[in-house]
Length: 483
Image 1 (cartoon, rainbow, N blue to C red):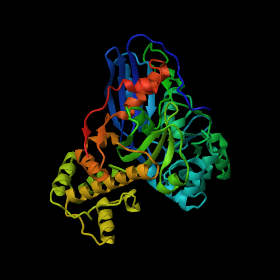
Image 2: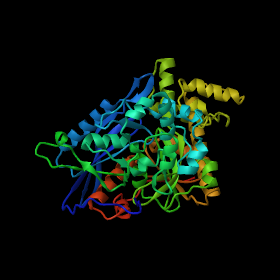
Image 3: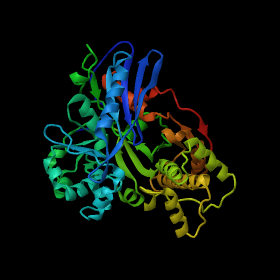
Image 4: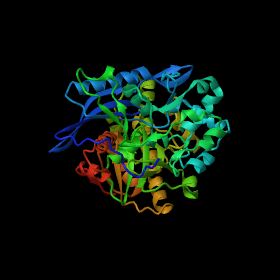
């Protein structure tokens, strides 16, 4: 299947167009209602809910019933406000559910921070380097392929009973429509999709002993996934189309930025995603050596990208502080404490390396930071602000290193870093990034993934012609912070 152009469902609808965007993040999900009329594009949050987890068979998993409940509540909220002309869903990548021939989940989807991906790498069936050489995906232990390798070894009966693999947004789309599809941008996060050839890496799938039936032809952003099943339609309502968007939330976020040619994008959330938009994938010795990979975008675009540990670490600090001190500081209080600590001129050595394994899924991040600094012969933080500052500095350093790699190794001149996501509101983190990278920051929409989701629904409906026209609806970005 070609991914060179956006497909369209065909609309030609006059008057205002209302698009419901579901944007699932690792911490929370949002139902956002987009409205396009003669005044432009507007976006409104109508429902927010936690992306809940459960423990199943001793494993950290996502709670599918809670997630479906958030989806349905958001849908009802949108329907109560008037007609909904289209629905799109984006979510995080790599995690998946297995369904049987009747579409029933064979257990709750495993959480990528459960550690089973790391166990899959350790099993030695496939190396990170070989996975990248064969698919072009980032070398991440949490990739779907390594999760499947471990699951196949632990629970082969579950693989045998499965009829299809659905990534998270695919699962939510199937819940709304009753029709199972695999979306292209999500597929490129699995480590089982050849990003250069634009198809599942079936030779690799065969070698791993995985059934080919799990991996079906993909739909691309702008295509129709299905229509809302009757039980979920508003009374007397039409069969609302569910349109494939950039179902990987990173794909939607980048679609929702009016990127200049010399800008890198930086999505600041639980994870930080740094990269550049490209016209073709890059898979060579540079991507292999420097931890970059390829992900599919919308309308024929690609992303040269690297994952960086993100504000998950600040979330873990908040949790650890609560356990130790029976206090639950607000994120604004943590930032203020870090800013105060920064003003004290603390030694430059008080910083972490976010790539260190201690920080992937720490039970107590304060202990992990202490251990990391002890190992380097450095002094430990003395309070909440110093712990937070060590995290901020480490994240900024890794982002700056990624920007330097894009320029020095890939020959991409970076004039500015275009930031979005919830972390873009963290002024101290942005200041640390500007200082470390020596590049100005341009701020895009905090809810860039929801905007990108809506834009691709509009393309799919035929309300706008292409990605360029869709991005023109964004009306530019806000302030720019100088280096």
